[in-house]
Image 1 (cartoon, rainbow, N blue to C red):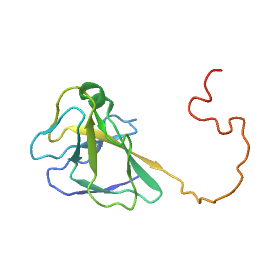
Image 2: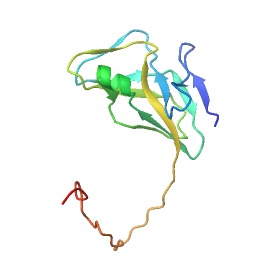
Image 3: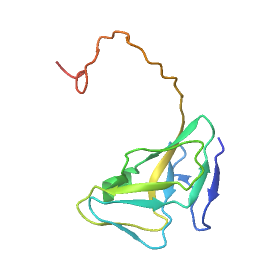
Image 4: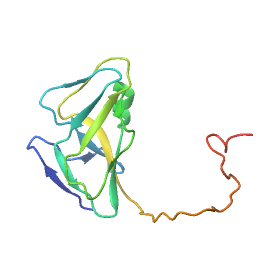
Length: 145
């Protein structure tokens, strides 16, 4: 699948896959200077790119495991959603879960994007839903008894 990328700055980096079988393509920070994220703080990090995600697909922004485990930095909204009709700059709200200040440098890999198909639903209001074994059992209801 081909995805058109527009660089909004000549210094922006095109997303890239870390290996031949990687599901997520790395997104890179585009900053004029290092960005300090204090512990417990969230900052919006620019990538300097816009994407033309094909219709019927969505770009899901996930944490990079290395950045999360080494620096405690991960997307604040856990999973970002880039719709196929969005043409603005892709940005990542990074949250610092560590106990110390962390620095994001220009060109650093800050998140990964996974392109995946999705289904749209038609929602219909009803007074009755079908019965299931689980029923209305909520959190933890399918665990050991």
